[in-house]
Amino acid sequence: MKYNRIASAALAVLCLIACTKEPYGTNDIPKVSLSEASAFVAPQLKPVGDVIVDANNNNVEAVTFNWTPADFGAPVQVAYNLYFSANGKTALAGTTFATSYTMAKADLNGLLTVTMGVTPNDKAAVSAYLTATVSGTDIEPVQSQNVNFDVQTYKANLRSIFICGQFQNGWDVANAPEFWETEGGSNTYKILIDYLAGGTITPGEDQGFKILTQRAWAGDFWGYDGLKAGWEVPENNDKNFQMGASAKDIYRVTVNLAAKTIDAEGFSAMSLIGNFEESGWNTDVDFVYDCKENVWTAGPATFSGGNNGFLIRFSHGWDLKLGTATKTSDYVQGGFDLVEGGADMNVPGDGTYLMKVYGNRTPMVIVMEKQ
Image 1: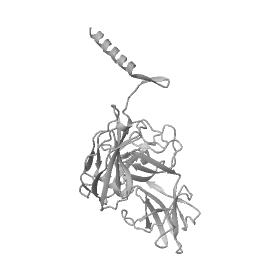
Image 2: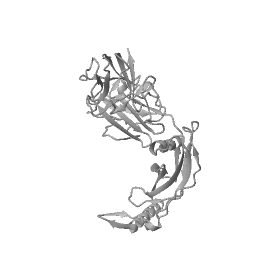
Image 3: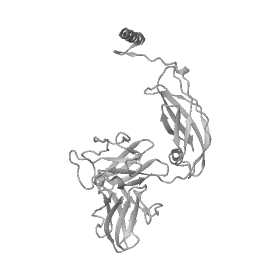
Image 4: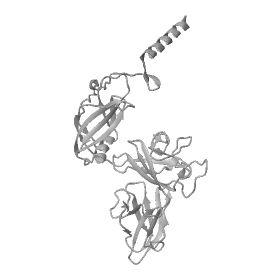
């Protein structure tokens, strides 16, 4: 009797599906019937109080946005996009399938001050709204009303993350190189690493790496399945990022934790060239990477005669060069900010120098150490 009841129930379900099928091309598929577009119901964003971001709450507090669900006349998965308008610009704040979205104050502050150009420490008038559409379709989205609120912004300190991989001579997580945001609150981080350390990739060799929030595997970390790669990248069994068999020696890696993306630009070398004895503007002196100190070093470079110009270039060519170095670094003692495409730099005076470049900051920083 039990089996007869199950069979009868299954037959009823099959009959229901069969009765609601309609032809679609050459295949029969169940039809989902939505309302007419004019009957779609837009979500309604609930009021938001004014937000204050400061040194005490920037990294520990969050703001939650809530709304009523959209209705398309059928039980479909709805995708919501939350937008902010401020300072004459509009930017996507987040995407979700839920009817709420929680945003860290640090990310809210970064979106306003970095992406939308609001001056840090100023009050911003923000207008928020939602769009909703049926997930995976091109159905025209519906839009909520606008909700207005103020945000007292904050000049945020730079945050840092870490990179760990085989390029350290064996996944030395305790000494994983640290690198910083391009701007406070940008959630975008850049670092220059020697991926091959002068070697080559052999079949089956592990040349992978991961991104971490701390120098330990106890915290958050991301590999191939956690960040979307912006380059054609193979992976190994541990979901580590790989540059492939044709990998360059050097990579500038860019991580965007807000968008969960990672990109890499490869070079064959970073070198010093200029009016010093070891170069004469003809010979490149390559920088060597120390992954524990997280610094690139070139030299000695011997300058004399008062004509002391030099530049840093990549892949022994002029497609990308670093120069100028007249602004004192805010973060590296004795350092100067490097400018992409900048003019010739000059050492302070005749003598022999060891050049150190910190490629874990934006802009990169040079320290000229007189020997």
